[in-house]
Length: 346
Image (cartoon, rainbow, N blue to C red; front, side, top):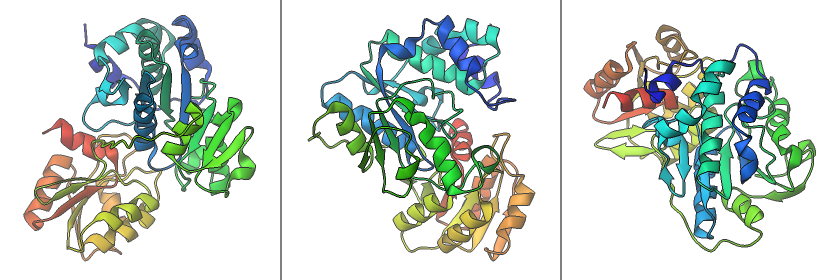
């Protein structure tokens, strides 16, 4: 029989129709493990994984047994589920939910979400920081009744699912605050969309403090794979929105980089590429293994107005090799899925 990791990898990551019916049925079959712990729900366009892990670590520093559920992964599937500061036993976590997930035809993300919640319950987690996968209202994580919700930021993304305007996207994300006592926002811009609860301003620390009911004195340093990694002339960052690209560029030294890039179809490729052109004049367009990735030739056509030299290399590993041949400093970016492909071939 296939390993549980291979089973997860074989599942469809994209539902034929969005909705919460399957995840609710799956959790019901498992005894509703998500009702056995408190949660802090993290939604937004950028920075969700870092915020989620930070909330969990701040809760741990305050004496709580904490879990964290993030997506997507870069270094491996186990990166998604953390209990008390360490990666959970991923094979065991999936084993708990595999049979009912197969019977119900659950998607990859639904199965992973159920596995995380069942793992948290089995491990005696008191509070779990839970990152939404896509949007919020119809996301599989929207089965938790989180007393605290954090919105990191809102940018244009997944327009076919979330809406064309920032307001529509924010409304979809903030729909997870259906049971919230406190909603933490970066500013007041979307305060009128909060369905209920007290509004506070800030980020991960403020969300952790809202849940704990007191100030958190400890500082935590959360470093995630694919989030601004630097080594031997290579920079890797999963910047997948124009705003994330701006943040990345603010961290880069003022030196010429050769870019190795893949971008998903539902992202604003032109806006991302326009910003990335400030990092260098040469780009190698490639395509990650994600089904939603832009074809490398199409990405190359998008890149031509912004870069002096564009090359097309379909295979991510070969694209990185070609980028290294073109210059001493290489920036790999545009998609965490690209970084995951490169990690898996290390």
